[in-house]
Length: 205
Ligand SMILES: Nc1nc2c(ncn2[C@@H]2O[C@H](COP(=O)(O)OP(=O)(O)O)[C@@H](O)[C@H]2O)c(=O)[nH]1
Ligand SMILES: [Mg+2]
Picture (cartoon, rainbow, N blue to C red):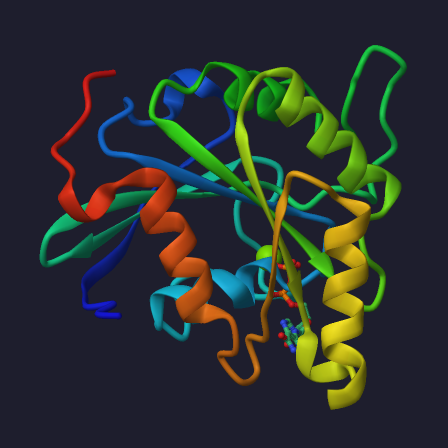
């Protein structure tokens, strides 16, 4: 498969939806617990070492970061959602990351798919499950990516992915490693299938 990325660039950081640039192209959002390897995964996917800041460096950690990835024959907008799982949530909040993300997930016009990243050694944890349930509720397409595959011994990888797939019927599970690049093609293929960007024109917002 030809994954010919012409350009990948940071567009905007937004801590409220009004400040997020208007819906332009098909969009994919990436979510996961803090430290799960989300920034590394996005960088590996777009083959840019430092497009997204990795752990330790401050970014817009509570807000949304928007990137644009250009292919020869299509454009994809990528949204890096804040990591969840650490901050305490109030009773009125469905997620520890608060109403901003919930509203984004529910209302963003050009959002085609949400990639939920889990650690292959931990599987889907309660926070992840809550997100997956919410995505189902708002009828969003979800893909579960089990990353840090390289941390498992080779003979445990297939069984771990099979177990995850079994636990999440109806959701595609893709194994991934930002260390080795394993799963990169498979994830792109899935994203191309779901967004149709390789044949896409800009969408109306
Ligand atoms: N071995 C291994 N380490 C990873 C992988 N992905 C991320 N890491 C490490 O996990 C830590 C957290 O990664 P980061 O991408 O910053 O996580 P984020 O907080 O979810 O954005 C860093 O030390 C990364 O080097 C992976 O696929 N394999
Ligand atoms: Mg990060």
